[in-house]
Length: 358
Image (cartoon, rainbow, N blue to C red; front, side):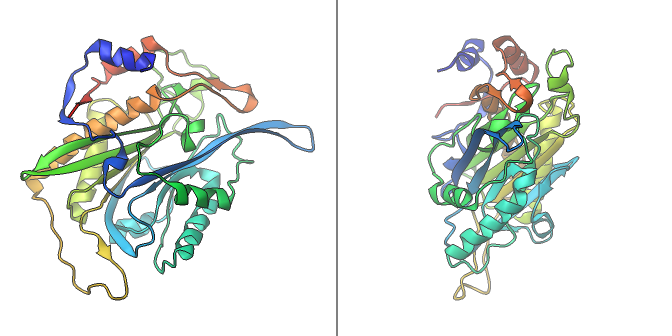
């Protein structure tokens, strides 16, 4: 247990309504895997110029990727400034059939092509459109130089794990900042009961936002840059049977609920929430059905799902700060982890809700 985890225990924070999943990770959803590629190196060009690469990617595989399958999916964007490939298809047709990958904006095209190559190597006929989300990690990372290698990207897909997802300064989290301090990757999950059946809601976030509104921190170069160029990426996975209209309602409500508890800290940054459901998978095999039968929960249960999702997102954001490490990047810039006293203020300000243990 690190010092910030001890602080959480010492503060005896109010526990949430819902217990955590066994791994407290998005991988508590059966079949979901996560993989990271972390690129941390310094290079010197022929001109003698030195620069730093502090980037990577984080991939979520929502199901066994050698299967021809679609999952119901939806998204909501607030002040959407992130590049998200496949947005129009998902918005119109509400399905996902590829990995979800978060990387920096200049690597979106390379990752997009790698996902197609991955699908073809598995003899997939339908793995389009790839869902790739681009974020701005240019404060610590020289984005001009950080072109990822396709073989490295493919290795992430092949080696993705269903174990607890790594958190902090890993994958795309290496170059991210939040609240003026070191941000990164966080994950969490909640167990909930709907109609006497047990379900799981898992979350993974990439925290790279609210640097212009850092807690009690005077405005300096480190927190005045990226004004409105930051982002909070939220990936939600559930095994709850949901219809597309319900998914859209939940994603928009989750972002609204975060605003209502001020976890967004009145920031001007982009907030993107993507939700997929592993229930009601649609087989796209040639011999598959031409008529599908789906289950779905009653609309009266959506409030419970939104509450469980909000709890998981809040803890995932806290974990993205808890599990990270200081990083020094380009131009000699160094971003420290959030100090203990500031972390306490964060927990108090946002009414930190941690999940109950099973």
